[in-house]
Image 1 (tube, helix red, strand yellow):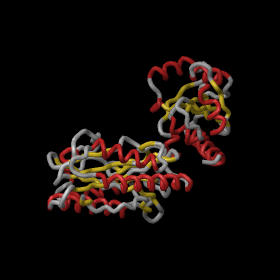
Image 2: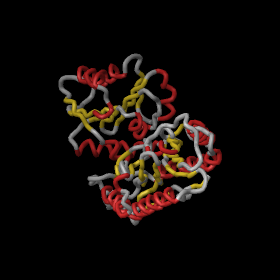
Image 3: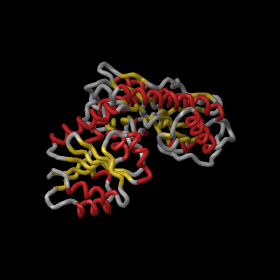
Image 4: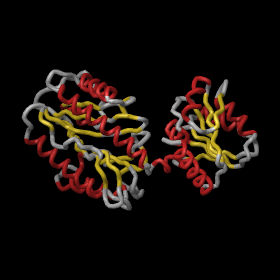
Length: 360
């Protein structure tokens, strides 16, 4: 991202701080620090105050910070909170927010002890995450490239799936193919689950070998240039059974109905409800055990969540997943997931891999 985009983000944050009555904010989340400054190091704090932002990091990242950010950089030779304390002593602020969702209790106690008496600490949640919910054109471009990497890796790796190969081996091949195509890493721990284990929505790969006449579920995503993608597809080893075909048709119908319901202004709960209505018509809603989707970007799970009771309205520029599924103990699970961009009149699907039940 350009320095101009980072400055615009910090300006929007300043408007938010004024709205909630804060003079400054201490940013702890690495993803939020990256969003506001461009810094990608593993150890840092960002103090946002007015038009100024100060990045605090340690000597390992001195050169990296100078290259990546236009913020003022403070290199701490000891604990970052000690360096922050020195800055707070000179800060013309009375109401100081901090990201309570990203601070361990011990760090909070140290922070509270270091704040000058004239400054009041106020916990805040979701301020920067709210800014991140709607993506810029540049961010959408990065997610699109991440999705292309994910799909190319899947298309190559799935050809190696056959009876006798382990879930571990397929997961390793998927991760290798993503890295080979430019991903920094998987966006999350790649899910490969076969047979009855596919009924576990977030199953970790195991030493179990793939067997004929069973399901194979793959849920994967790439992290490329900082941005995540997410996709799930399902295969059947051998000639597809009638039961697998019937369940897959129902899930696909639910997924397409939910996709058709996506547009700016519609509530997240309404999209989730549409998927459940279709599965209920097939007598399968009781086997759908998670939300219909979630936002993604710098992190794999971001605002909004598409689930029951979610009043949040979708906005053009949000990037979300649509992923209904059914999970039957002893038989297996089927989930179909795409990554899409919310538009004013509908959505743009970034996932091009066919959704049909793959016959291996």
